Amino acid sequence: MFLWMAALSARATEDPVAKIADDSRCARGLAWIEKNSSWVTEQHIRLTEIPAPEFEEAKRAQALKEMFATAGLPVRLDKVGNVVAEFPGTSSREVILLAAHLDTVFPEGTDVHVRREGSQLLAPGISDNGVGLSALIGLARALSESHIRLAKTVVLAGDVGEEGEGNLRGMRTLVDSYGSRLSAVIAVDGPSTDYITTQAIASRRLEASVTGPGGHSWSDFGAPNPITALSRGIVQFSSVSIPEEPRSSYNFGIMEGGTSVNSIPSRAVVKVDLRSEEESELARLETALRQAIQSGVNQEIAATNSSNNALQLSFRSLGTRPAGKLPDDSPLLETIRSVDRYLGNRTRLERSSTDANIPLSLGIPAVALGGGGKGGGSHTLDEWYDPAGRDLGLKRLFLIVASLAGLES
Image (cartoon, rainbow, N blue to C red; front, side, top):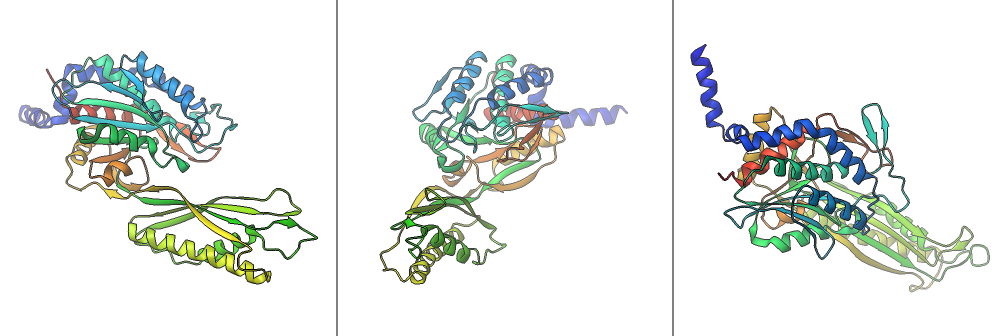
């Protein structure tokens, strides 16, 4: 029995994460998390109920700024509206950045009141990304309450422009701001603790616009119709072969045009999201999309016996997300896996399109992780979150930060 206990003790001593967790200051931080998960959930609800549509994150940003300040962290708003709080390091200019996006996909006027059904909390945006924002608040308080001293500076940021047409402008600004000081970036996005996103999926978002003469549905019947032209192109593009490898996708997310049911529209617009694991395949899909929409316009002109300039097609880029991949032997990945082993948390590697795309594309070590708990229905009005297991996510982030930043005496 003595030899078995001694072996366990030796393994614990050799485990760097166990050594960090046993530090009295880290132990205080972990204990705070255990006792205050319900408080974090209260902050989660408060933030979720502040609307934050694309490009309208200011009110939520101000609330997050106040929460960071209450936790005792120096905090500011940067030039694009990111909320930036710093936990200063003692002996290094290196920075560990954790960011959670402020914005949601839901337009102004969406009811974001949180309602309860059993153990679940339901509201648009409660998982994506109310979880990430509240995780940063919990982490900020745990760091402050622990009185821990770290070698590297830890930056906690609520960033703008992750969803829709935001084009990751918040993360782009953060990466530009800290530059070569960044030693690791963690995007905290969604709830799950069973994944580590190490590969960034590339995407291109485009708007195709067709304009024409318009007219009355009866007296001008036969005039070329921009909506019909776009529809012809969409049908053609939908027959384009999409490979299983590299995994790729497309989505026609928004189509707009016209002024009334009995008017031929003078303009129609469709917005498209293209994604792929490989930039070369993404380029092929964009070329195929442009050709298909142009062909649809040509077919509509031919079908109505109109002149070649009866319809005009234009394309506009709505955003580009670069690809990237964290090496399998990255110290960042090994640190996360070590923490997961210590916590008994089983994980898998994932691919996604997140704020981590920007640092990964620049060769900066980065991942996306969940904030804890369970959720589903993202980007729908039935989005839900269950806070059971939130403390695991918070402890995971706390230990990862302490391991990456390094303890100072």
